[in-house]
Length: 268
Image (cartoon, rainbow, N blue to C red; front, top):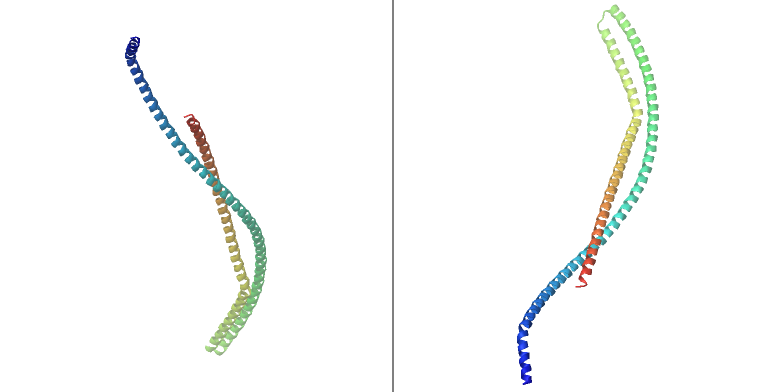
């Protein structure tokens, strides 16, 4: 009887507690579902963080490779710039030497031309004076001869009254003038033949001077071109350095973000 009574009391107590237990079970089930959903959300967040971390690792590696390539390119540009600077210094020294030599040569040629042309002008003046004196004497003699011939012809004409005598005298005068003209032309030709080599030499030297001036202009243009190339390379290096600093700053930023994400994901 006691056992039955105890069992009956337990049954009554269980009946009373059952709704509470069922309610508690339902609440526990709801909490369990919420915890399960929270766990799934945390797993999704962890997977997203992991994917983000992988992307940031890939980006970090890519930026690191770009930084490495940029560093190598910067070194190559600096080497090229150094080589070009050395070439420019060498060409500049060569240019200055050639310029000095050309200046000395031009001064020598100018002095030579001045002296030779001065001598030639003096010789031409002297020969021309001699030629003038000679021609003057020839003309005076010819004039005197023609006057004598005219007087003789006039006397003969008045004496003999013949018409053919003046014609013969006139023919003789024309022949004499033609001979004088030939002599003057011969003297002029001799002077031309004597000074033609000097004129040809002057033209040759003038041509060499023009070629020298053209070479100097070409060297000046080459020097200016190399100077412009150096300026472009210097600007390219400056742009590369600015890009390098930008990439380096971005790389450090991603590295800090990666460390921050890693530190956040560790407790999870």
